[in-house]
Image (cartoon, rainbow, N blue to C red; front, side):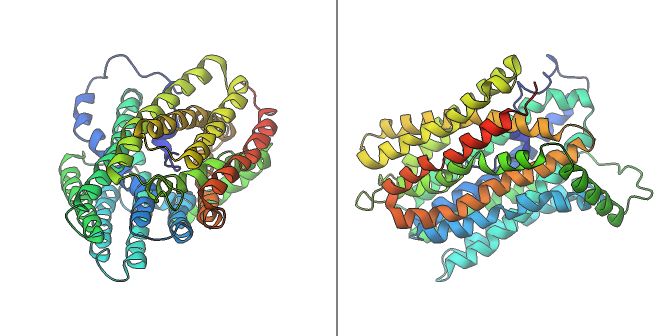
Length: 440
């Protein structure tokens, strides 16, 4: 299981992209003051919305059907993000958007913290998670735009690995530190209050980040915008849509973006609730601290390693020879969850081993998805077409994940993981079809 909406800065394996210079370019030292913290700030709310929220609701007793449906809907801002991204470029500077959205993120985290100890905590906290989701998606747009405008091309290339590292550091902070903190606090506080304090810590973190970036981000000089109105940009967006859907093979491309992770998207939403569920209910009865170690350390390590090796494989041999093997890598390790559900092992190392293998396979197999997005985006409007692809990528996670809880509650965990294996079939079929049109 991986946090499915891995976002754009994580999406281009460094080994597939242009290699960065061996030495930092002149003047790059100043960027160290803001790039690490900016991409840490970008990663945290994404991981909270995509992963931690589901774990929290499962631990607070929300059923899998409701949890998956309502947290799955939170992917919508990333689906729609290409629609309002041009407005971020017109309405104010990217620097102001960064600071403003970080303030909004602090308010969203605080709102969740305030709502959690109340009787209607589920829908109250969901409202503020929507604030987090839209603010996070908008922050993505502003941060990436600022990165490209504030740095010369050589510096951008050199910092690719740095920003990816700190983005993954944000995933560690959420899936290991915040989850473990909530688990520890629940030992001395009522569980809803424990989670409230955890989100309060996140809110404080973003108050500090917003204040720090107000000081550290270099002033931005807005480029000349004569004639660049919101209406004009929306017309350009319409032209971009038309040109995208006129691409040869676009129907197969969209089908691939929607179906390649059909099984993995469902698994990703239910995997942690399965870890937390009691053994009588078919789960593994693990503590939040144990799950934090499994996913936040070993899982993240093997996910990263798989992604790096997948990028190297494609860079060396091209996508076509690795397309089907990578589809196998992202799908077949899902059988390990069926093994865990049927055997319910008590040894933590066995669970950790299964998750590590699955995460490695996910990282390795996801490299094919990312490279395919780059290929179908090539040509005129490449950047805008890539943004549209990321919207379809988010939709391909959103829809299956919303239904996953309904399936699990009707089949049980063992039946659900059997279904997960059946659900790999669309991935294999669309990979075989899409591979025919791949030219390395």
